Image (cartoon, rainbow, N blue to C red; front, side, top):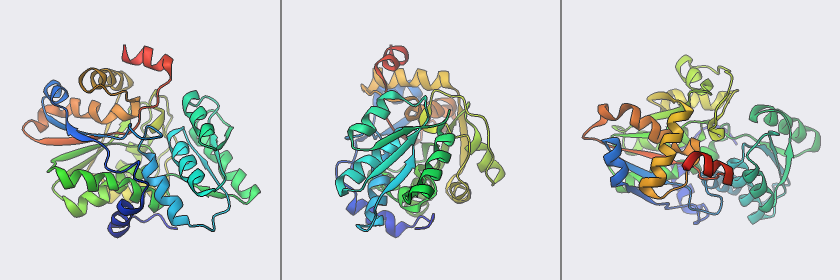
Length: 315
């Protein structure tokens, strides 16, 4: 399976992905739009069995891999691993997920509850990924890398199918981690709504994907951010290559602004969203004056917060 993303397979994915992940809520939250000063459509990917968007791409990936798949290993900060565990459990495929030793304990617990074997290795996601790759090679497990397999992006692209079916958008702000989400959305937007700008959003404390997009090659950079879902230190080369044609702009937002908009999303929309999930709203707030009179959208990518995080970040 290659890294390419096709319109035809995004269409196929929209018909075969587990329905629990499809047709997620999408609406203009008027109180939030008033606060931002620009009409903002929220695509809510937190109300499904794993509370994040990864179920789309992982379900389509395991569907594409087929019944002959023996066992899989991957790395995750927590949300991708939940998606893989859900998809593999449904099909009876053993899955091992490597996560950093300091990964979100709630996400680790949920991966295990979904049937994954979870191994903790390394001080960050990229070190965990190295361990997963080595484990796969030595134990004859298929190593799956988020960002490098087209099927994951094609599954994520179904969000754009649903958005463009209902709204005419001037821009969509997409949290940027390993790149599958923005590349899937960007591929569909180019086809269905080429006037819509695709703006990727990185954490200011984890700028590697922004630097990579600007330089058109993978650029490693230190990662220090509360937004574990987009805390990338080592970019995936395939994802960076595709981003050159799917992304119009990349923005950086600091942790304190993500926290601020997490609180506003809770107050205005009643939604519990993790830092990476609020990155798009934080970016819209930074440039709202430029988009006044327009309609923009963002994906709220996840809502997996521990109880201490809820107390610290939402109140």
